Image (cartoon, rainbow, N blue to C red; front, side, top):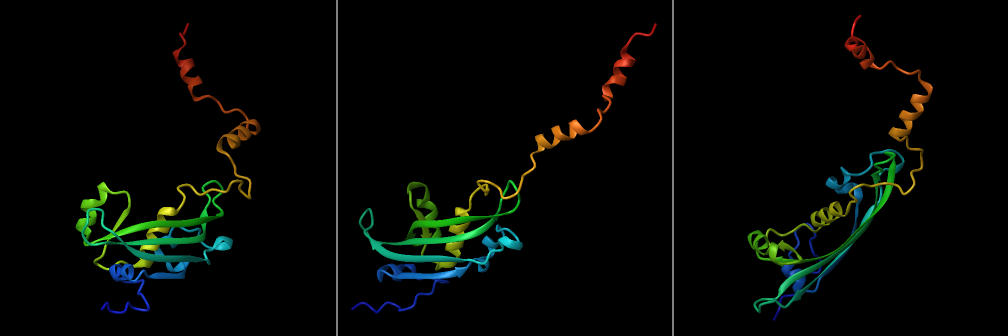
Length: 190
């Protein structure tokens, strides 16, 4: 007789094997500002301050092992969030949608995960120490950040360096060429 699975799973220290055996499902929301590492990459203060939530869900299952043996624990993690990032063009806030949709296979230890990592396509996680689902969620959200966040069209005019220089050249008097003095020194004296 199998023991009854826990009715409430601890996302801070998830027993992934038992979670998969039970076909467990978890879902929830976490405040964006509670994810400290993610918060460091967000637009600071003002109108674009991060006040939103990350909506997530995780479900697990056992799948037969590829080479016989004990079934492997797998978990599917999905999440979405709207976060304010800093536009790299105008430096103002730009809203970005972050999406996570990943499968993870659990293996016995970190050493096994490291040894098998190069030979498999899926992401591997160790059963021990028990993973933090919220920590994993934050890792995945960090990887989902755009490399260069930008507005499609910035809400303010963005000064372009080459245009600024050309405008300045038209309004300023011509500056003397510092090499003209050298050219005069080079002329033969007669």
